[in-house]
Image 1 (tube, rainbow, N blue to C red):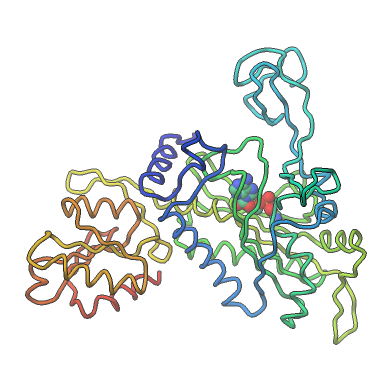
Image 2: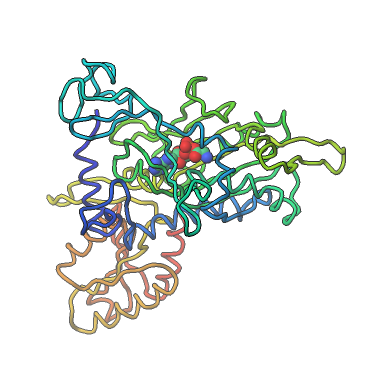
Length: 444
Ligand code: GAP
């Protein structure tokens, strides 16, 4: 059963604490487009940096790339997106709403007099399904004509395929090797929703791994295992993660095999990363459409072949939602209710809150000095407003793992207390050891 109450609470916390806001809210919002506030941008950046480090910096067989969003329109003909990236759509002639033809809330066959609109309830008002392309179109240059049409990319992958020879030659890589990229993608989704789960503008973190045909299945298994291990390493509850193998009728037009990594969201198990064996489909098509040879030549054996591609494709926004949902908890502490985001310290937007117990006796000055020192190393927050309990609660909701309090004893012996967000244990630490103490704990 979908836990809509939990999602509502999360959406409200995300706004209250500055994680995520609705786009253009003062104009009534723009459908399924979201903005990341001060804490959201840090969370997403931490996730992206962690992904980039594990993909590009820690491996010597994956290179980075940042290709443009706009590409030659022929790219999308070659990739199959112009002809095949479509959803069947029906319109209600009365209330003017649009639905996917396979929307389970539609009663009856759309286009027949029995079919009932799920929104206004009228019978016979739904049109027969017609195919609707999900790519956003725009025009390049001053004239709005068919020859000037360009698309906002619906996936980042194609920027990698068309650059694979450039990257390989410039970095002197040999097959097997990969190219990783993080960037925006756009899809004119008909039924977006569930907060940042399905949006019309989103970010993807994609890695395409080029292998010799015949070695693809082994690499597919390797990447499947590596990606699942990565999510566990981010601190996601392993009981809420699982693989879902695509049945033959679920496979995308380019895939020989595909596995989703799914998370158990409040609205059910859903994909947030896909691992695909794309075979030589993409490179062969680009070879055909561009007229340029995209073969790999093995310098030792002289063998020529079009590489197979194993793709790992993760949505940065969907991953941020997984992190938020997984971290959200409500609990009772000392007879009081508290909301906590138990984010792993490595991805938490703010690493430490610094609080003078009271606004007198030199405590604010010492707390400020500690804060100034810490924020040069990692994001920290200074707060002297309201009771210490309320200040702790605010940081609990923001997911801040450590709270440092300057109190009367600090004046006497330069020690501070460090409160752990999860265990609530307060340890007294020598001020001179504080940075080292936090550094050790922030790595996880
Ligand atoms: N290049 C392959 C590809 O794009 P996909 O399964 O369509 O495959 C991969 O998308 C990932 O991108 C998804 O698992 C999801 O995390 C993210 N994604 C796709 N559509 C999205 C949308 N409308 N909103 C947010 N994230 C989306």
